[in-house]
Amino acid sequence: MQGKLISNTLSFSGMGKSEKRVQRKRTGVNTPRMISIGVGILIFAVWLYISVTGVVDPKFIPTIQSVWDALVNISIEGYKGSTLLQHLGASFFRLFVAFGLAILAAVPLGLACGQSEKARAALEPIVEFIRPLPPLAYYTLLVLWMGIENESKIALLFLACFAPIYVACVAAVKKIPAAYVNAATTLGASDRQVFWRVILPYTAPDIFTGIRTAMGHGYSTLVAAEMVAAASGIGWMVLDASNWLRSDVIFAGIIVMGVTGILIDKILRLAERKLVPWKGKL
Amino acid sequence: MKDKKVLMTIEDLSLQYEGADSSMDTLALSHVDLTVYEGDFICVLGPSGCGKSTLLNIMAGLLSSTEGTVKMMGEPVTGVDWKRAVVFQTPTLYPWLDVYKNIAFGPNVRGVDPKEAEQRAKDYLNLVGLQEFAHAKPYELSGGMRQRVALARALVNDPKMMLMDEPFGALDAFTRNTMQDLIRKIWKETKKTVFLITHDVDEALTLGTRVIAMSPRPGRIVKEVEIDFTLQMEDSQEDARYTPEYISLRKEILQLMGEGRGGTK
Image (cartoon, rainbow over all chains, first blue to last red; front, side, top):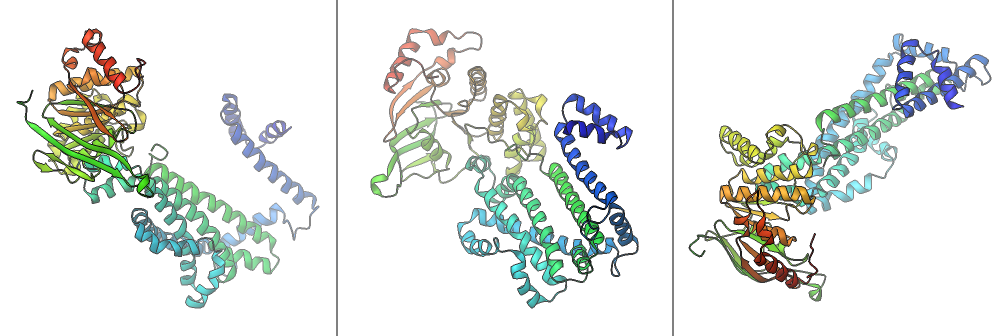
């Protein structure tokens, strides 16, 4: 039944594309992708049905048309004084500053703690205590200390991003086989050379995985933080819209968040492939 | 034989691993004495747990002994040194470097003049027959080819001594034969001193000039023989393996090691 549905819906999604997909399907390579696309189309079709027939109150599920209008409107006119890009910019500024600081702090500390039991003993309890805490639990404290401006948000996101990167670095260093290091030292490498030429490249793929996890964690924390206290940002926009029952803006905001989240991860994956092509080959 | 120059002397070497309490301590090596001469090809045979890898690691400077001394050319061994190259059972090549850069790793970290380093790396790449794979990544090579790279990487430093810990143990029988021919050829051409650990009696007998048998608990040397089958092993003829001396020596060693059923592979 699903196969039938896929071929039916594909026929009106643009000739050039569907021809290409059919060709690929014949080689039998892209069946999973076809299923994913089919599910996406199915969800969209249900939404389309609701929009057209109006069986659900548009306060709960706005029509496709109204969400599209809201998207266009907040892109051009803006929402409460700032355009969509400005809201996104405010969010991304917080996210990327915190993310960059977290990488700068967590990678060296993580690599050091992976090698030294004493350093680990000093830092591990703090990290282990903060890690399982929901970030919003201590956010109130950060707001109390630093105010509701960017400082408290950046501090919060820094803490949220730090742990995944730190933990990945420690684990990566600990699993380096002794033979990798011994091979370098017996060939004449100094400790410093072992670090730069063996430990760092060996751990790089795992560090990257940690960075991607941190980004996902940071992004969701960001949106939540903006919902608690902010006057700009994509998260704030959605929360504010809900106060006015503007479900069209809520939908538009959520879709934008989802798409940018996927885009960020795609960019990180691309960077990963370029920077550490030896991932999985160790 | 004894007019050769002494390269390394090992005297009364013991190593005890500490267990949870003193009754759990294990004596990995017990009172080992060995003199290594320049140009020797020493093959060490023994079952697992006989301390042969421990001995190699101490000679390399990767482990320190609890008792006894190791001296190389009169100097006590206190740590690793590029003059003692180590080839591990699994070739620990760096996947972030291509084959050529893996081989050039030693000269590069030691600060050898770049031009000379490049020339040496190329020479050894050719010696192991991988010139066409200079820019391949280690994970694109077969197991035998990887071990060739590891061999070239160790040789490129022109070490005084090659310490090899079951270097062909993870290879299939055919590849292993090719690698044995290669290491024999390299040994004959470069006159390097080789200390090779193996659990394969034929490998020891067809490569070594001295074969040392070790036994476990505690790890110690139980027998040493000087042989010259390797000199008779020219690439085309392999008659040495079928001579009566070879067969009887093989049998003797196998019985000594408690597995006299005739096969080790």
